[in-house]
Image (cartoon, rainbow, N blue to C red; front, side, top):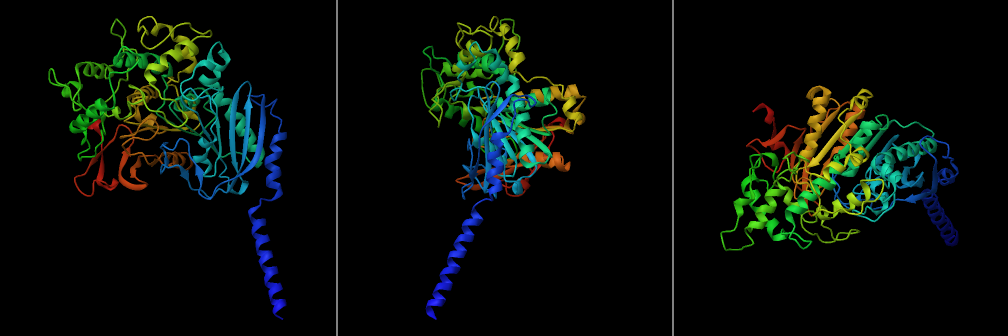
Amino acid sequence: MSRVVALISLCLIITNVAAQDLSSTPPKSENQSCSALMQLNLEGGPEGPALITSAHLVDVPASGLEQWPISTSGYGRMGAVTTTGIRQYCDVTGYVSPQNKFELKLPLPGDWNQNFFFRACGGFCGYLEGKLCNSALARGYASATGNGGHDSALGFDGIWAANAPELQEDFGWRSNHVVTVIAKAITVHYYGKPIKHSYMAGNSKGGQAALLEAQRFPEDFDGLMPSAPAYEYTARNTIAAAWSAQAVSDGHGGSVLDAAAVQAIHKSVLQHCGAQAGVEEGLVTDPPSCKWKPEMILCPSGRTSLECLNPRQVDAVTRLMKAPTNSKGEVLYAYPYLPGTETQWEGWNYPGVPSPGYPPRFANMDLPGQYLKYLVDEKMREKGDALSFDFDRDSASLDRARRIYDASSVDLRAFKARGGKILMWHGWADAAVVATSSIGYYEAVTKFMGGRKQTEDFFRLFLVPGVHHGGGGPGLTDFDALTALENWVEKGELPEKLIACHSVNAELGRCRPVFRYPILAHYSGEGDPKQASSFVAFDPSQR
């Protein structure tokens, strides 16, 4: 009898184990549906020819989906991993002629939210990083990204563009559009259902790409989330960068600024402007109204100290905070550095330390040479660098580049007419693309569209204190702009504010509302200043 009981028990154990194995293995149809995408003929499709080079199922780790870069803001709580209910997805890679590589991550049919998401690359692109898809994949999106139309080294490598006008055009404006069209076609084929809503996000060059979609291809997306858009891409990478490099140059390839000087600047800036919202926050919350000047911390004559700046450093910072001009005094780029951006000057206005995947860089010194020599003209220029840049001659030679790379059109009527929505955000501490540039674009659109009311019903801007270029920084880096955009597109809920927080060691710290531009948040005078509920809206235009 005991043997019979033992045998029955063993059979039950084996049955349970087998059942567990079967439950963790997708039905054959899922494997087949994914791998069958390899047979999909995209040679004659719209915006093709295109080719799928791989398609296979991928298991999601129990810990969640890894993010890249981990400092990206706008998707909720920041971190290296995003938790999700997605357990598997079909990973598809391919390219659209000539070199527009893409990766598309398709959740299993039961997990798909019936929406499409595209995340654009940044910098000079040239990389295909599937982790850029994961913030949206975690929510159930069919999520895609691309390489910007070429392969290159990470960072500001422009050599790929030398004597390659077709690649220049792809990078400037075409690549994200053709990849979107092809990725959508694959998505519809895989699920056998139409896409309900399409979204796009991107930072810096990716933000420029999102605005460009609204301007050139208004039918591609229903919702756009550009952050820190480098829409005047040419002027930022040449005129503004060269102006900054010449301002800080020590004459030997380095900078008169360093970490100690910047620390002294930041300490002084906070003493003067660290409580603009009515309570001490350790942040510059309204940089344009901050009246800090570098001469406030000029070292006494004949003395040096880590707490003050020498005369050369004062001159350098003074120039950084003035707009570039030509010999006639005409402003060439209207967005100089602001107080509060100094927390990100490392790597831009003086050499930075290496970061994962990137060499150490001095970006404002490096950018003009790469851009002028390789990206500006059809044929490679023999000369071009930051320190020899002529603000009369060289500035006048950039018309072709502006046509290809800039996204400065303010005519968004077609995008608005088909119901499109734009939620744009920018960090006030951004030293790569200063946040006032987004104000400049938004105000120009407002004027063209006929006023604030006619603009706010489809386009809103949010300026987040203390946030660097697309994320990171000492400020309010945790906020969920994507959900706000989704609710606007799908439910008609106007985004009046974002709740932005700062986490310390993964623990939630202070929070406050970030109201739509031009509304500011001020401390009410009551309640815990670390709680968002203690702040009220203040409209500076009503002063």
